[in-house]
Structure formats: C-alpha cells, structure tokens
Length: 158
Image 1 (tube, helix red, strand yellow):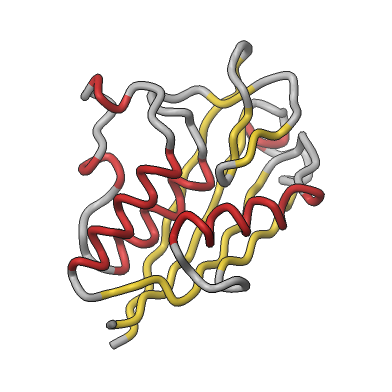
Image 2: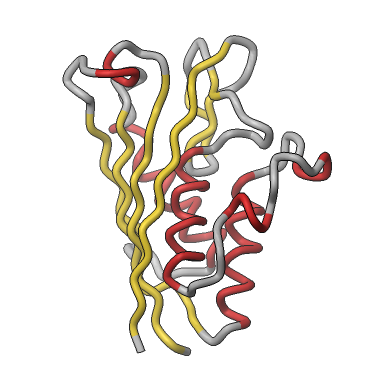
C-alpha cells in the first residue's frame, strides 16, 4: 500500500538565532523563532510523514509545552517520527518540499539539505526533492518576516 501525506510549517524571523533548514545552518543575519531549533523544513516533512501514516502531527508527539523539546534538534524529531512510522510498517519512498522565502536565497543550499534529510532518514539518494521559491513580495513572507515550507511525503508498506 502507498500512502501520501502533506505537511506545512512556517516560522517568523528573529534576531539572535541561527537559521537552520533541513538540518543545515544557512548563513543569514536572523534565524527562526520556535520552541525547538525551528527547522521549518524538518517540521513540514515530519508532519507529511506522520500524516501519511495517520500517526498524528509534530505538535502531538513533541508539544511545545514540554520543556524536554526546548531547543531540540528538529532533524532528530524527524528521525523519531520516521522510526514511529516504520514501526507501523511504512517507510519513506519519496518526499517533495517547497521552501518559500524572499531572503536568504536558498538555491545553493538545497543539495546539502536534501543530502542531510536523506541521510537522517536512511532514505536512498534522490528520494528527497527540495525547491526554493519567493512569494513575489506578497504577505509576511514577501515582507521578509518569515519562511514557510510545504511538504508531500509518500510512504510505502515495508
């Protein structure tokens, strides 16, 4: 059986934090606000994987009201969610993500992010695709206030 899930995440920019996306620290003057490390790429993919397996969402598994997740490595949360899904008999077959951000330009980092995601999930090379888009100056993203990510994950029975 093949199952498909969709994930979405957004965070606003703040001063004094590193910008971490897809497990990669991106050189930029601001980072993202959040209880964990605020890796919106990892969060969106986590929700897509969990959704495909009907296993809840990232907030249910790792609530921001629980101090143990303060400044947590979102790539570890992603790995834990994938382990849960594997325990239900599924594994990631493919994922496609779109990062929406006016700045910084993310194109040069997409390959490194994809490699980090596939490595953390134990997925084959080429199974995770990332794209970066702008919001053409519209809305909170267009004003440079934050980043959003949309993810689609396909799981296959193991």
